[in-house]
Image (cartoon, rainbow, N blue to C red):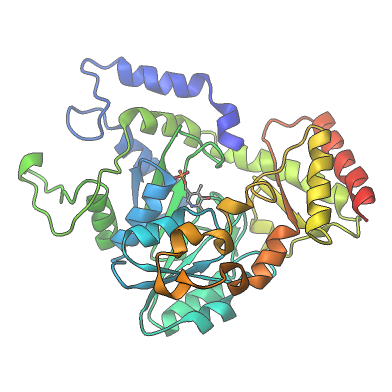
Amino acid sequence: MAGAELIGREELAEIQELFSRDKVNLYRYGGGNYKAREFEEKFAAWIGVKYAHAVSSGTAAIHCALAGAGIGPGDEVITTAWTFIAPVEAISALGAVPIPVELDETYHLDPREVEKAITPATKAVVAIPMWASPKMDELAEICKKHDLILIEDAAQALGATYKGQKLGTFGSVASFSFDAGKTLHTGEGGIVVTNDKDIYDRAAEFSDHGHMHQPGLPRGKDPRRAKGLNLRISEVTAAIGLAQLAKIESILSTAKENKRKIKNAIRHLDNIILRPFSDEAGSQGDTLIFRVRNREAALQLEAHLTEHGFGTKILPEALDWHFAGVWGHLLGEYDRYHTADLESLWPKTGIMLRSSICLNIPVLMDDATIDNLVEAIISGAAKIG
Ligand SMILES: *Cc1c(COP(=O)(O)O)cnc(C)c1O
């Protein structure tokens, strides 16, 4: 799990530095220190945007990004039927209506499905890159044509690019997560990035009860223009983030190299279908996804890999948290989904996900482990037919 594997002395040193100051302040506001500010500035510079606002989780980050972009009650927000549930929870928490649509062959928002789902109530499209890029040009074009806000929840795709440009810099605003399964790890944490000062201000206000952070005014006198929550990051978390960010280039290149070796060694298997990409060179190393014949074959291969000491990630074992077709507990709140057979709304996505396997690609993976994994995939593939 990338950054989580590398938590160590550098993170501790950042925390110690925080504690070495005359007056220790662990809170993002007041009392100085401001590791949070430094982390935001460095992250913004790395990704190449004007503004970054760090918050308490990736869920908080997409919540703030949506709020910052002005998403509110009744707005329809188109997103994919395959995502970790967080962005759909955030859309719902703002009173907006999530509209999941089917995947294309790259496991991303299908631009044609997006266009079909647009109504007069549609306000935004949330693209969710899964370790690689959706068809960003087409999505951007559709959003432009229909005057929709393009948002990226790039939690799974830190460092991935599309035609050389980093994901998270295409839409009006984007979010990232630093949970244990993501490229960088801070315990809990997330960040909103944008080039739009107004979205940045509104996202930051939303993360802090609506405080408008007016310079020269005491916090208690801050004016408000919209409601918010407390989704703030702490100084300790931001300190860890600084140490993690310093490792990002090596995390990205090592995972990518490990993934390249594994992929090249299984490319010849004709019952393992590697996914097609809109831009393979820009894809990221965290996770390898491929398809097999059907659900039974996927479960059989999963069991075979487990027997050989290799787990899967997200698919198939955590499908319930990554597919709109099983989210009656959330989508059931909406009239349009209340009585629907959810599974039947996204049949293509359901079939793709149920016949797919995702493998976590660790950073710390020696050649012997890579060989063992490759052998396990090859012997498993022979079994499933
Ligand atoms: C992990 C993830 C999130 C949520 O991040 P947390 O930090 O766990 O809250 C949001 N969106 C996507 C696409 C994710 O994969």
